[in-house]
Image: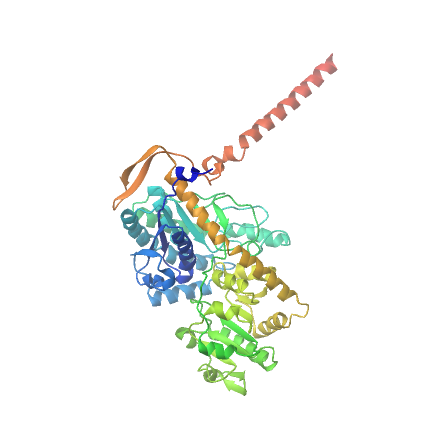
Length: 543
């Protein structure tokens, strides 16, 4: 009806985006959600570690109204040591090594928490959208009531466990579901948390000490059906195993920017014509060791000699270049040559670069295979642009992403502990030759699903607005404001309605939520009925 819209004026809000450790890969989806919210008229502010303010310097991010600096990031030396530690860890055999890098990341909580208190007190955001590494954002929600949306690359740790996916979310590395998993695999997945218990307890004590030292005397809930905040997963069904989710968890990926860097002239020349090129990139943090490099060099030499590929684009930064075996012999456009020769781009079959416009390369028809560490961003981009993948995962979600790609039929996976040059060659042959056409069919299937799902980033922005408006107008009577914590943090008081997306079981005891009381009552009633029947039977026999 005319005039109805005038009754409700949409509130424009302040949105605080937060990204800390992990690099720009972690900041990119958070910033993209901020861009959508900025288009809807909201004010966008961005908080990050010192030196990372440059991330929002490009014209694409001019929607950011203010940038806040939190604390110091890792030094280059600390970052290199941290990611090498992660790269060498393996939860299948060493849980202590697996949890050690998490101590390094979570140690940033102290600095993040202190700076975020000051930033939130100054900007008073209506909602916080944070990368999942910034755990302190959840503490700000606890202290002030400001709603928080955490952006995850995969399903969040500990939340929304279902019986048909073995193991605890975050520890599921063996099987995507119980459908085709052996009994041994399922038992191993369920027992993994028990085997990891000493390392988990040590980690939890570390977190407890750190929080108590900052005056925080409570723990955040980490294992339950539904979270107390909005969890946005930068992945999609088809890659992720479908499962029932509470309304506060949503698969909204792939969250990709609408614009990306184009090919430069050198790459255009390299990809010109009818070339079939393999693109190899292991992200910003993986450094392949010399023996791994030798295996890939040997494998690509065989593929070039067999004319299955015409060239290789290899992303290798300065630190990675130092690890190449310079005297190793490889095959080039003019016959045998050395790694030292091709590393300087002296052979038309090999192109090495410290940085590559990944999406432009993956989108080019000449790129026939993507060799990747299977990080969340790389997997999303590879699927979106329809490029088959050979995956070698090292840590966190990478091994599971590699398994997902293989199960989807869009690529193949290798194990970092056991892969060989011959395995690389065999799997590349299968993917490149694709004799039955199933690889290309599945790649196209996943590309179409990814492109449709990529529009869910607008739904993610809808959810952020939902929880924001729900919190704005949830107090009854109208809220008052009081100071809490340090730095002038403000907290709304008054009786609050429960969050509209939170399922009721999150606010109940397990006894009530699981209907154990009804079960006990039913068992008691059944037992009583059996007793009465028995006594009635005895009485009748005596009569």
